[in-house]
Length: 211
Image 1 (cartoon, rainbow, N blue to C red):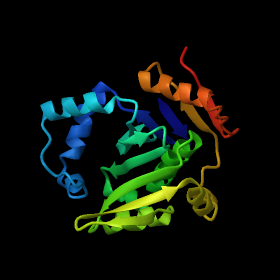
Image 2: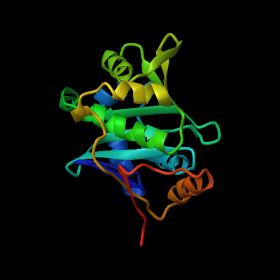
Image 3: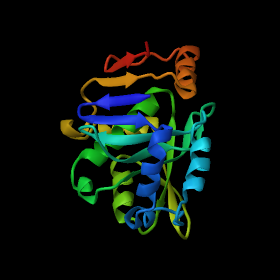
């Protein structure tokens, strides 16, 4: 699937993306923000990708003006309980964090998840990652558990909408969100959820099905 909003694009990962993701993930600047910090080999990345393309995981390449700039994901979704148990984002260019794009990308991803019937998002953040801690609190996450290395934060659907309602318009989802379904098992699965649970998306969504 592909999600487009203004000049932001989120594209679900394919096999041709995995080497690029591995190179990003092995950057010291990215490793230092992760709980798992070992070097990732080509074979390990291949095994990882086989596990990613399942019905409880969503991984997207983030693009600005068609240029890949990072990854956003939910890698443990319980569709029955409607909870994403481990979400995250990393961007490969630190200068992007000085713009509104990290917030807009995260809001777009979260906004789509809640519209597709999730009710809670959970993230793990390293305790020494001050930027990520501040960022998650900014968009409404609340502390759930503290551990020596990391903390767990939770964002519930109503809290998310209450928080973003106070944001300035340039940090809100105000334009049309184009949602392109592709011919993948995951996309068919999400279409099935929409149908079975009678989910009607708002007028801000433009759903485009494959030919």
